[in-house]
Amino acid sequence: MSSWPSTANSPAGAFSKAPPGGPDRPSPAKRSALAVLTETHDLPAERVGPDTPASTILRAQADHLDATGHSTQALECYQTLLDQRTRGGTDAEDDLRDAVVVSRMYSSLARITAGTGDAAGAAALTARRLELWRHWESTLPGNAFVLRQLRP
Image (cartoon, rainbow, N blue to C red; front, side, top):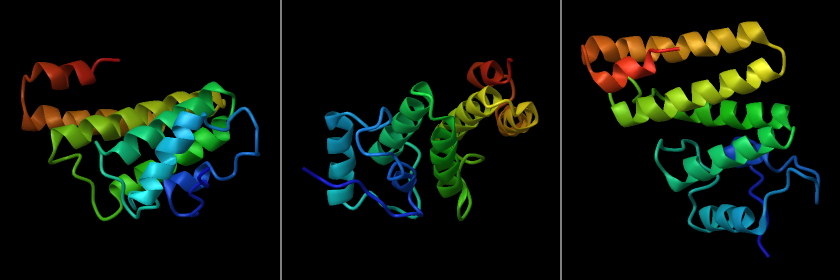
C-alpha cells in the first residue's frame, strides 16, 4: 500500500490532513492515482499544469472533499492549485485551454466559498473569473465559446 503525498507546499498536502479512515479519505482508486503521481514525480510539484493528470486528480479530490462536507479542506486544496497555476505567471491570458482550467477553479472556489457563507469572497472570485473572460472577449471578439463564459 502506498503512502499519501504529504508535502505542505503541494496540493496533495491539503489531503494529508485528512483523519485516517475518515469520510474524506479517498477511495483505493484515488489513493492509487495519488501514489502513481508520486512515483512518477508529478507530485509534489511546484507548479501543476492545467491539463495534467495531477491537476485532474487533485481537482476531483477537492470536489470530493466539498461533497463530503469538508469545505475548508476543499477550499485549501483549490486555493493551493490556483496558487500553483499562477505562480510565476499564468498562461490563462495567452492560452485558452489554461483559461478554461483557471476559470473552472475560480467557479469551484466561488461555489464553495459561497457555501461557507462568505458572499463577498465568492463575489470576488466570480469577478476574477469574469475579468479573465473579458480579456478573452477582447482578444477573440464575438467568439461564441468566450461569450458563453461571460453569461451568468
